[in-house]
Image (tube, rainbow, N blue to C red; front, side):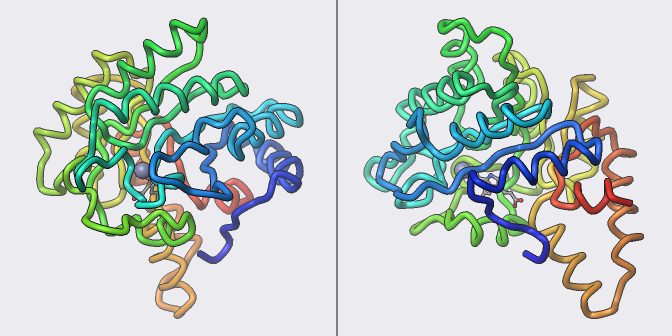
Length: 271
Ligand code: PBG
Ligand code: ZN
């Protein structure tokens, strides 16, 4: 996507300082491992790319560091969970997610953010963190994460599109609001500190309902396709990019988001 890059560790000092200088309070880190395998073992390597990135950012800034917890960037099949007979094995995946979260916490992450949508993962991660004296590491859960075509550009950048099937057995169907509320409720019961709705723009009603019903710190993820559409239309000269950016971010805030995760962060903060 225009304006978006995959950074090597050597550039993190510079970019994270820039983020801090613009008064953006925190960053969310995704990793691109050198090798992928069936079980995504690079994800919990204590010397892995995200683990190194956390240290690099923490050593150079006071930024809040949030890390993505999922398997899809690390598995050769591109699914967010372990596969057994072409099906997701939910409960085996929970053990791996706990290991990833612990290794990120050990590296210094302030918040871990599971984006996999396995059932029971918030509870499993909370338990693993607590058992290892990381009671103060928070969990921001992708509580209502919909199966969406707006993730296209991200998957291309992360080489994480599934090699077979799709994510509909774990991500939510876009017409369903009641399930979103049930998912959020479960995550809160399991110990989520912040709940997220994703994507944001086509799901403003979900953000609104979640914030009103639960009163929890609520995050909105302004995803890659939402960013890409605005960039593309403005490149064509069809819309005013800055104004549309501001208007869409404002709509998320108005809907009730306390936190907005956005590829526009640097640009918007620069304004
Ligand atoms: C995967 C993950 C996705 C995004 C963040 N984590 C995509 C997916 O579920 O395929 C999407 C982010 C974006 O589109 O900006 N766990
Ligand atoms: Zn995933």
